[in-house]
Length: 321
Ligand code: KG4
Ligand code: ZN
Image (cartoon, rainbow, N blue to C red; front, side, top):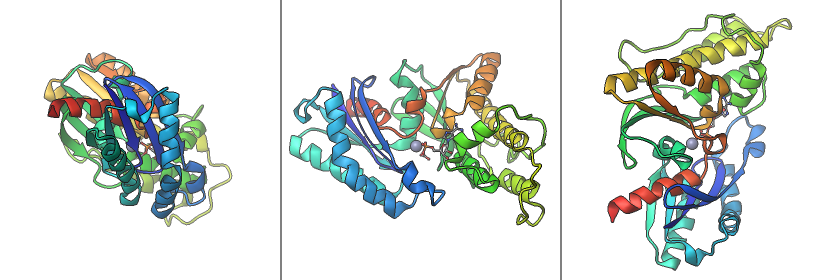
């Protein structure tokens, strides 16, 4: 079964063709990151307009790279939520129109479930599993009984992890998006140099809070009023390495605790922050120690992409059959 996937929830326009939920025949992604860079964040109005411009070109290219015609497509899967409404509407309108024209089924997908599913694009996942989604907009933990069943166990109550990376990069004058710049700046830094606060929100809580650590970095770098100049002798590598370590520790601790509390042996980690090597290494170490099989998608499936939407769409299509 060939599924055409369409993803436009934020600032990536993407189309993919996936066979039987796992063989990725194409995954075309155009990023608007350079356009939004000067605003240090995604501007919704600009994002919607860019999706409108790129949408059909990206679908055509997705089909071309898969050596497929629209008439070969058996079903269409599209991101319906969560996301920027103007951006989502572009993908939804395209998907609904194509499904109507072709007379094929359409499934409307939850983008966060697709991030949890994303490691399955390279090797099957064993269920039940605990899924951590770490992106610019979300930090969520799910318990998933199968490809089509997700229960949210915890979520960020303020800044998402990626948002904290982006805001701390802005405080330090590092380029947007902040995650990759902080990872780069932290190389060679001492992760124990600064003891930034880690928020656990009480025993047993699986919710996250990253706004406190962001403020702690601001005060550390720009003084108690948060308005001072960055000291010329500030060791940026030490500050970023310490910040990164604190975030990673909270993410790993809570995810491992969730898996242990639910007696689950598989953990899936997806979303843009899952590109981070320190996070990957920490999960590998802690996962091994706890007897968990921790699964990351390759980096191209960590950030937003339509392959994960088409892949998961296959399972929803078959569960409804
Ligand atoms: O999943 P994603 O592409 O888009 C959203 O749905 O938000 O995630 C983007 C987020 C940004 O906040 C970015 O700074 C972060 O992922 N990110 C990283 C890294 N690469 C991207 N965070 C930490 N380390 C990275 N290497
Ligand atoms: Zn995402």
